[in-house]
Image 1: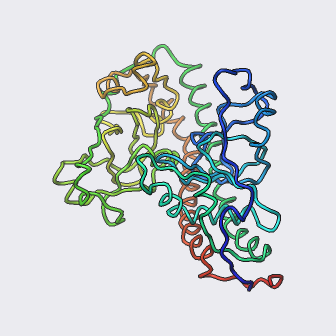
Image 2 (image 1 turned 135 degrees about the vertical axis):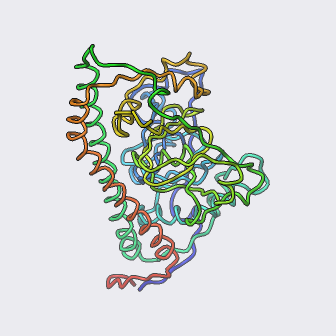
Length: 399
């Protein structure tokens, strides 16, 4: 086992703070190189960048010193999302809200990535010191100290364990995206392109009991918890992290809070929909849960013929912009609008056949998500132990 040594982040590689082209020169944007901002980060994968904007060759030339080669570490350094880390598979340029490290040859990019993930609290501590808006400037970022193996082989051995878990998690996520896309295609084909005019239509509020979640007073922190023995309380962010089925949440409500504030219980296998600020995010519950007031849930009435996956796919393909103008829909839609959404009700034979065809897709998605949850917990358990040296590897090639 090799020696571990303290380094400043600025000693691990070249630190680059991004820059945004001037709005006075719109021709600096084009389609030649991704221009990354914190909003382009995804939540489950170290490679997850999906740039909304690109730079032209003119913009690239102007910001040539800001180009980040493949394998750089991009760290958000301002605001509530500060401390998120990703790596880039292709060269990119970032805005000024991101500090990046281009590692020197003696350091392994994958290891540094996981070390920065492990140092999340430290990054946020630097950013929150004495500022109204959390921010880590380049000088402070470069001065943050971390302890890592001095031998690159040991760095690579440690990182390979965590990378193998992340690769499996990423594969399962991609499988689920493919399965969900196939399910949506089938739904559109069966119930949009081949819709029968004889099918009934009904407002959602007539066939579902539509409830809205609730939040106890935020100033009274004793109602909130991180204890798994309490009741899972879903936020819109949780819906983004999980996928089709909700397994994990960042917060719980105590049983006393549920009783005190009469927070509506959402049953298992229930479709939930975000309808404030972030419109149209969807998920299906996996047990009895709760939600905040930005999320609606749909409990089928006794006479309803529709099942959760059918409703999920209907809402997934629904154009929520039909409910209001562009300016108003960004803010919110209200529960009455949701209740008045009109849905088709195919005949029972068609519904039964579709349920049989679609069931394997969602069974596999649910199984994959359960496995993702298990692998994520394992990775998150190993990460701090490997990054601190609490778990050491027998590395024959290490110094």
